[in-house]
Amino acid sequence: MADINLIIIGPPGAGKGTQAAFLCREQNIPHISTGDMFRLAVKNATLLGLAAKSYMDRGELVPDEVTIGIVRERLSEKDVAKGFLLDGFPRTTVQAAALEEVLLSLGREITLVINVVVPEAELIRRLTGRLVCRSCGATYHRVFNLSPGGEVCGICRGELYQRSDDSEETALSRLAVYQRQTAPLLDYYAASGKLRNIDGLKPIAEVTAELRAVLAAKGT
Ligand code: ADP
Ligand code: AMP
Image (tube, rainbow, N blue to C red; front, side, top):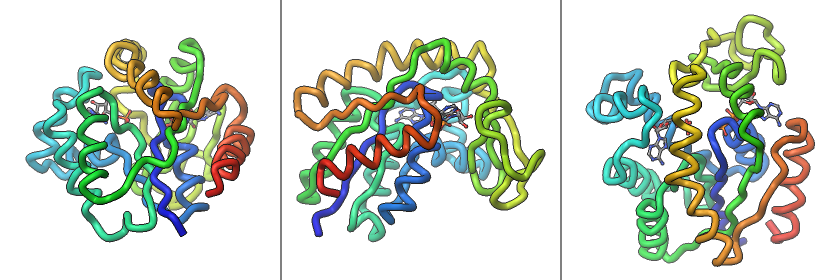
């Protein structure tokens, strides 16, 4: 069977991580989230974490050479042989070009780019109410997506916390960064014929159903 190489793209808070978790479980492919990789590095106080932290705190993008380096390394690991889902990468045209180059060198190509479309006012509500499990990284929302565990994670009973970059001020900066640096990629992927737009404003289960339909139409 052909490998399934997916990108999930969209503004912060669109629901990329939420949908990626379902999709990767169903398709049995690794979920590669650059945001998660950076947060883990910050938590472990590694050199990468030290390099990334100040950018993340300001809601800015970590420099391309750092980000491309960690993705290149991750894509050389064995578990991506059957496919992968990239979440939060690429975020600039330089990153998109580097990804093409890495995949070309591996004899692979992107299967589909799924764009999760959500209006800005909703994004702010989602970001400022997001709760994340400190142990397993599962994502919930104070109003829209309650943890079945109540105050703790419904999966592992870990502590839930609010990301420091989910304050309203930093969320607004991140949305502006998305418009300026990432949204231009949509034209690039539309021109390649690989872009599929999904209505991310619907309830979580309906978005998942739409995603499944898009993948089924592609034969994956
Ligand atoms: P992203 O990875 O795109 O930044 P997340 O998947 O972390 O976004 O989702 C952002 C927030 O919105 C989380 O609190 C999540 O529980 C919530 N959320 C995700 N999808 C939906 C949806 N379809 N409707 C309502 N809330 C959602
Ligand atoms: P996310 O978890 O996707 O919302 O990302 C959180 C933060 O990590 C972003 O605001 C950036 O500072 C950093 N980050 C994640 N992915 C990238 C990327 N592809 N390029 C640059 N910075 C990134």
